[in-house]
Image (cartoon, rainbow, N blue to C red; front, side, top):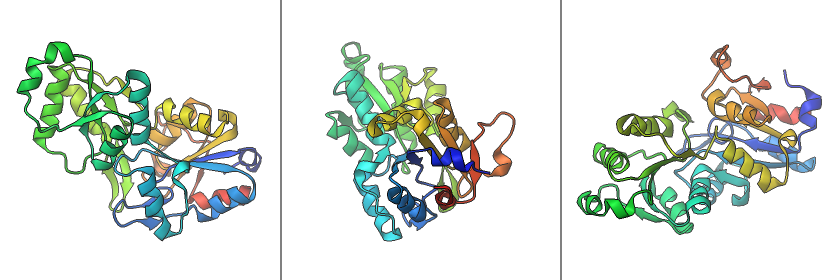
Length: 281
């Protein structure tokens, strides 16, 4: 049962997208959030969407949420693809990126000055330039729903033999789609690590602390001011718990009550639908 006093103390609400507010990337349906977002505004609180999505920009998501009644401006949406592009720019400058991902992710990378190369391109010219390029290129991993064997194999060769390093947009195993839990980015990252015997350099999205730290900084808030609502224990709840953020598991997505066990991250509370939280504000 949620603690009314603890929830009332929170000034910034972080909300996951898939499995919490909506279901379906193509044919989107509303799960909840209208009542809560309205109550947050009327009580002087703020919110941000923290999404691991890499298949749409914040602008795309904002537009896509309008038909289901959610009016959320792009500046309140933080995506893993945007933050990954920013992370690369901040830490390595404009970089050479071999992307496992879809066009919106490529757009984000280019907007930060990175070059995006085709994974299907011939490997031979790169083999000849290997010595001069080592450590200057990255295999950036997002969700690619059309990923094929050749692309995955070329990514493996670039990491194993040609000096590229793995940057993961996130490492979630699944996300919640219209057909239920669906394979996500984490298994692709694990396949590359296993094949190359090399670990990823960084993971940016949830459950990484990095996404939460950027979000807190964006709102000029501290962890004690924040509350995170998500549908995955290993992703949303684990990430929030790592910073001491009050965590709420919502049962409309991937994980259910029976998912909670002795080794699973423990949420601060559980609700059936995100809009139930409006009752405590």
